Image (cartoon, rainbow, N blue to C red; front, top):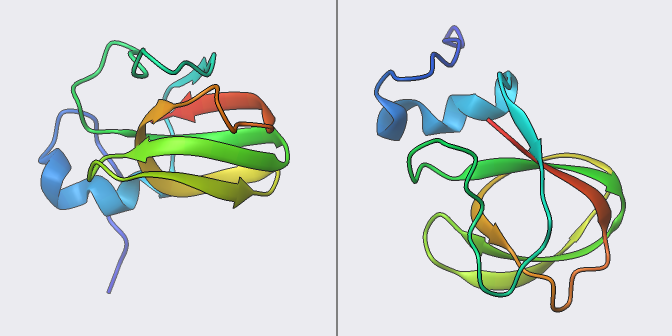
Length: 96
């Protein structure tokens, strides 16, 4: 089955799983216990790019809050918040 490219503005619910294949936008994330990631897009969640490995407490697009041990690099999980409490990774970017 061929992989369709992610096109911003298309049916995002249907194509959300394709977003990790190609990002078109990135913004630095300041972890916060009170503020969701807001980079000017709808509430479709963001993938994370981690600069320095460590734990990252996130709220997922599905509403789960958990601490993930993430390596440096790209994480395909869709998140709406990166918490400052319990987050030890640095150089975090939200990509979409």
